[in-house]
Length: 201
Image (cartoon, rainbow, N blue to C red; front, side, top):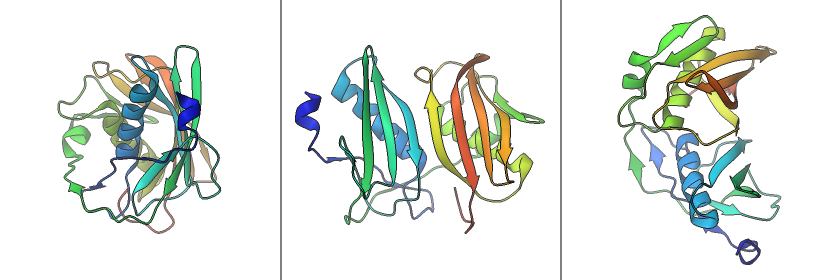
């Protein structure tokens, strides 16, 4: 099945979010996580996602190296680990969705080097909540705009678990790496970098 997909360009459902004029990491994560199940079946999940720059047009997933890729990802399921590449095409994005981070931030508990949610926030998926927590954690190191660059998961994100991010290192004042945990069990690692241009993240 995957062999037949190697030449495919699979369009992802990636609307603009809020006032942003670029594709947000939360929509890429959701689209790819859904695609993992479609291709590999129940139990499959998005294991890793790395973004090197923003995308301002529609995004397609490929399963062979592409020199124009702005990001990479891996799917995991049972004995499978499948690599993929994200490519921006010229198709404009016409759909926009609302997104209010405030309910997540209001329930977050902040400590030095750690931000957590004791229970999930209704109406938001785990990655949406994770991104808000991590931005709050990064703001402890330096205020301003932070951009998601990568996540590597040990297991699928649970919709029912408590969630926390704990800073493990900061590099040159520009990159923060953190471990993410669910119900106090480490579930993966995540990175963000300070935006050189500012604006929404």
